[in-house]
Image (tube, rainbow, N blue to C red; front, top):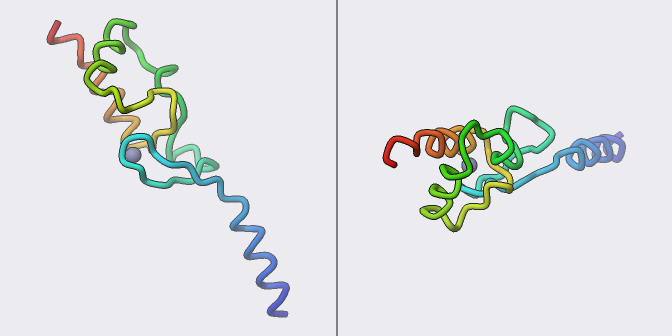
Length: 86
Ligand SMILES: [Zn+2]
């Protein structure tokens, strides 16, 4: 009984696909779409100039990497708002 129990638990764990957020370094489960996303450059609604400008100020962050949902939202907002100070 106990052996089977352990086996099913292990299978459950291996279904977790843990990724590391590029910004806050928090782990999140990649299988849960609400938890985060990959490559926010793809979903940005702004010009290349805005992205480049933001990237200049945030050289350590790779926009094509993994982001937890919170950092994805914050980063997207920061980049899209960047146009105001041109
Ligand atoms: Zn994060």
